[in-house]
Length: 70
Image (tube, rainbow, N blue to C red; front, side):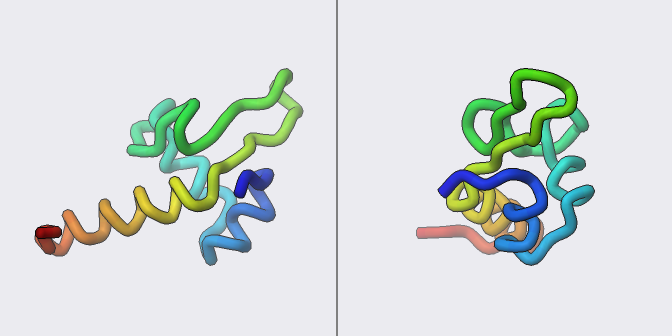
């Protein structure tokens, strides 16, 4: 499911600023074209793939806790 920033943040239980900081363009691990897409102008909302973002955040959390998937 793809949602604009505010709706995506609410669906993920995170703040819009947190999501924006996770973008690769801001030093984060969420990739443009995979986890989010920019709009046609600087005022257009960023669209987020909720499932891909949720998976990436969970994977990063597991890595931080050194939990390895088998």
